Length: 332
Image (cartoon, rainbow, N blue to C red; front, side, top):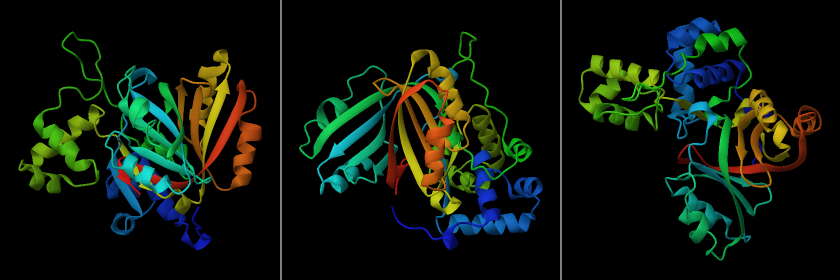
């Protein structure tokens, strides 16, 4: 893992701005300034600096929370490869649109990835392509059964609860189907809505004026349509930032075996923990997968030895991430 000095960690002001963007990726400078006790000019200047050099990117989340936490069709892949072939396999996986997340462990021969797939399907990547690759020495896959926490829902713990609440938009409202019952978020997106989503996916902070120019529609129409999309849960944003710059240089993957009668409670407890940025019930012997950020290895040890106690966990396997290869659809 590359070293990040203490001098490289963002100032508390910048970290709080990052946390504000996590609450609402399209928050205005005026609103952020009001809640955080800063001047709008300071917020605009700092946000411009953070985005201009690529320190912070705000994108549309590639994975939206399914209703009731049910699976939206995803597989966790754990791939072990021959040393010397890791970069080749990582590059091939990163080129695929159906794989939004790829991490490499500190061991240097292990890849963790998330693949989108149809629930219950025999995904050709898992059943044919990876097993037939001589560089792959082993492959484990686990289907997501229930979502407790998504990466886009993680919040850097530098805001107070009232600040976070003031910055967070209202919960999206499910679209009604023709039968009148609540349907999945974001159905029936018209061409304008889809063009706005496509434009915002790599840069969710594009202004309505910029989007109007790109789409050829009036700015007032664009503003109204963006508000509708946000209300329907189609503009769930995600902040991409090197968490080492937030003072969190350690990321750990946790593969947990939990007794069935403790699974729901353990998953919720992990989702509520400020360090955890992903928690999922899955198939396989490790029926609860989680990912978390820590300030150092001592904090990881404390989490394992203290915070997991009493959750019905009978086995824990921990892997530290050495390199982030792809997050949210963009290669690192």
